Length: 59
Image 1 (spheres, rainbow, N blue to C red):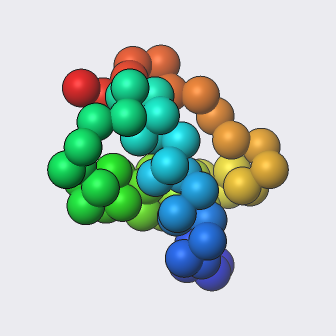
Image 2: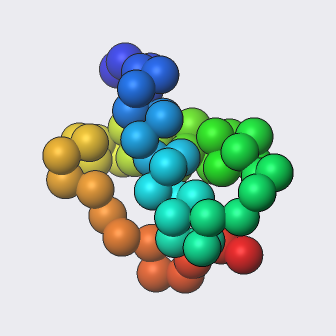
Image 3: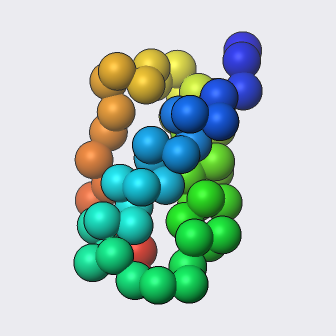
């Protein structure tokens, strides 16, 4: 199983940032969250093109 690419993480982190109303200064937090989400999805066998919408948004 491959690790998420930097581009996949960047795209997911950007989506998380937008969901959280684009706050300043939380880029590292959103990057780590994106890595974690993508890693968990890969473990469950969810492909990047078939992303699940979280039931509860962070923040």
